[in-house]
View 1 (cartoon, rainbow, N blue to C red):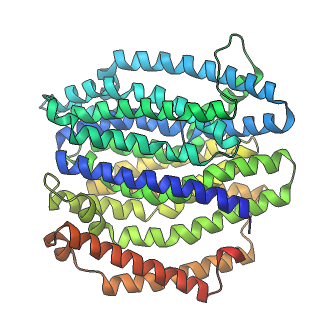
View 2 (view 1 turned 90 degrees about the vertical axis):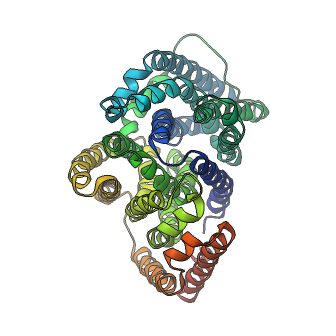
View 3 (view 1 turned 180 degrees about the vertical axis):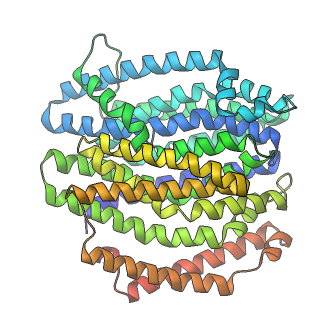
Length: 509
């Protein structure tokens, strides 16, 4: 067992768990106050555009390309050169972000047309105009959160994983307070959510600064160029496709959903939010730590530790991800009802959201595997392979979207996204095996089947002892919560007890 890996990933998971719980709390207030309708569709599009780009710069291409550069500099250069690299990358990054932000704010209606053409062609222009206005407020969040991601990459390089993982909590708090209090003072109450996004971005950036100062790595503006900037460009631009395909696919889902019935964007959003909880706690947490660890092992030319780290990350991903996958599918509608079905968010919206959650949830393992496998290539400086695989998966998703959306509307979009994630993960593993970088060992396969057996035992329990949907619909919030936490808690105990009886513990991996 790699104790340092487990400790670091546990810290990230704990902080991320806090953030995601507050994220679900945020979504509860959004659903309760604003429901699932054309107005919430407009906000979600205005939020998803900068948030999509944030995923590329934050949890995706930028961080994935930057961390290996910083790790290599940390191993092979002195602190002055590391600071020099940080200064040059930070200056260029800030300049590009300012230009993009100014242009986006000016042409916001054009951007909304590009990403939500269904709003433009709608007989009622309210959604289009509202989304355009809100995008002018939400888009600067990209500038703020991208700089926050830059700071987080520096902190992760110095093994300060907790601070970047905690930072998203501030966005959730800002949006909750805005929904509850600021909305009462605006002519268009839902505009409060857009202002909450902007205020949250400012809070997140300011929160990181003292920690950068503490490790003496606060970026400074400089003139000139540096080879590290050119290296970052080469790695980052194609890496957008390689490590962020799932986010691109989700954005494509949103684009197509705008031409479906009102509420479709919201139904997909709420189901995606529940998918994001285990994906962040497992996939992103493991990927964040794995990238830093793998980059160090590769720089030190320690292939044995490199291979063991990949295998260890995948084993943890399967142990935690497989039951989560089953849980999302089996408990989709109860989860949506317990978390969101109040006031403006009715039973019909809950049912529609649960159907797309089942489709997303079925692909959870693939989403997690992509998060873990893509950094394996990036840590070795190989950008082309994840890019090639990502483009294949993205093209497949577009075609699958067209086919499945025609027959199954918003549910088909979720099905297509999960299938493209399976294609992505399968091809990444194929190339790892082909190049003798990593292959599943006999022990790994043995562990997988034991995990599968424990998950089947847990599934049988859920199917026999979970309350029916009518109970959740008719019960008040307290009894709903008690019912879902009881079934989840008991299922967790049964699953991990089964694993232990089958001889699988973290110490034996």
